[in-house]
Figure (tube, rainbow, N blue to C red):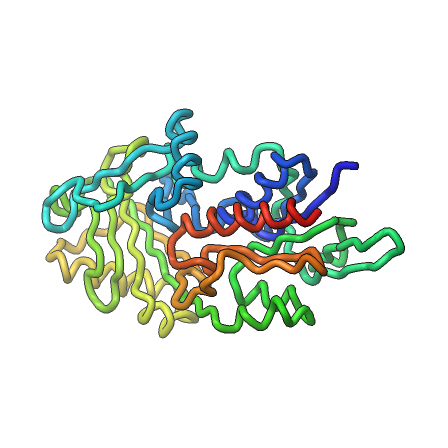
Length: 327
């Protein structure tokens, strides 16, 4: 009989996990609290303009993820990005930067194929029922509805949220206490005419306040008119300003960029912010995933292996393989 499994979280890790299980013959239900899939591999539209406001690019650091990116490139969903740096140089990355086309969201879309994805579903708890024939998991949502039964559950959300869902499963929950995650404020702006200096498509570690500035429309497949700019605040600034007014954040970050680059005081046509409350990994778990064959529940995420988006794919893929081996 075909087994049905569940994944909580539709970011890169959760979708990679779900896709592995689907290809192994499982029915897979994926539950995501947001309205769209992708997690921090994200693209948002404001005022008719698209912004990659989460992960800015990915790199093929493993054979597994490299093969997936090659598949995407072959179907037009991904392409290399060779931005000019703040030193005016181009194409100097030690490892090639890959972006989704026409948006970063394109990197995750194929992973959802064949999965039963349910968006706008915030998971409250998970519970297991033991029977003579084995056990079954049920998932309970904030609206007091439930889904199940499931033969196994993969939790692919930030570590603090995963610990809450694991509850009394201390053998899985306790190791997650050593994971530290940091917030990240993202500022998005569109200008009708270019404002960044020529060749300055990427500026990293600008100051103690600003960690990243990019000309989003320098990526392949983007609209080229004017300047579409994404700014990421530093971890320290984001932590101190985590609960600040978004309008204050927006002005402070833009003022910092203008000051550092000696830019004119130009008002953007579109300007908005987003807080990634668990946007950065400060301390990883140091393991590919956590999984209990006794309970048939596991956790995965970029925070298991490191700080990079591609770590999420590798973690999810590994957990999916572990679950299939145990079914």
